[in-house]
Image (cartoon, rainbow, N blue to C red; front, top):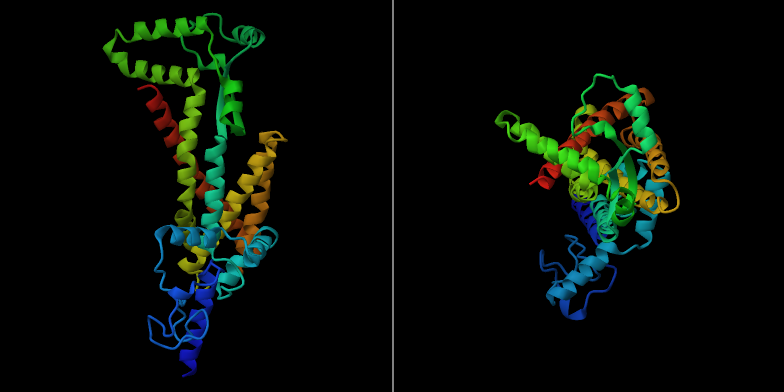
Length: 351
């Protein structure tokens, strides 16, 4: 009998934890007896099975509004969750995975709310997480470059060393276009076009000509390249949670490190990551984007091992070693995805 009561209490706690809607249920949607188990209901939730006393029979628009309101409501539990997430890394994930579900907001809810906020903000403001700026070298830089090159070197129409490349962080599309637009002079374009025309007459060099065409298109339209690139990058980042979960399960094992634990930790970590990225985008309005990006990297180099240490209760040596290995594999995977996205974006520009 005591076991049944314990299970019932856990069901009620879980129902309360997962419920985001604090508004009372309309009287017409309640019942005297539970629709699932038939037990008498005295309060909002069934004391026997934990189901909410609500048949949900109302208009679709009202259901959607209530669901979104529950999802995005920032009640006391949400504020408590974020305070602990930001200032006590790993505490929320450990507590939630070990049963403290009514004190903190569920990881899936926190992750979805921040994801919608972050990616929605990027889309509305047309902000690039990072972008590649390509500009021709100044006359002084070109003279210095020419002086450093071998005298007998024969210059072709396309030289990648004729340009300066800069990685820009957290720039809006309009800001980026003002920096990177019209990057090629007419003289360089004519030279490149003549080289491509001469090269396409040779069938053996047709592939090289296509590559040159793609590079030329990228040099002419870096804003379009970055727009396509930043469309795909957030999508890849959104699905990195299961990959992080699997990485954690490979390198951290044990009865207290189940896939369930790694999934909860991965969702909370990515929620914090997206939130700090959102703050970084806002800070980049008043501070240099490169500086903000460096601070962000340093912060996570400190945050992640502390979170892993508190979550999985490993020693510091194992925790730091695991952090380095997991970060390297995760970074390699993300970098590979970035390369593939870049190739795909450039190829699409040249078609």
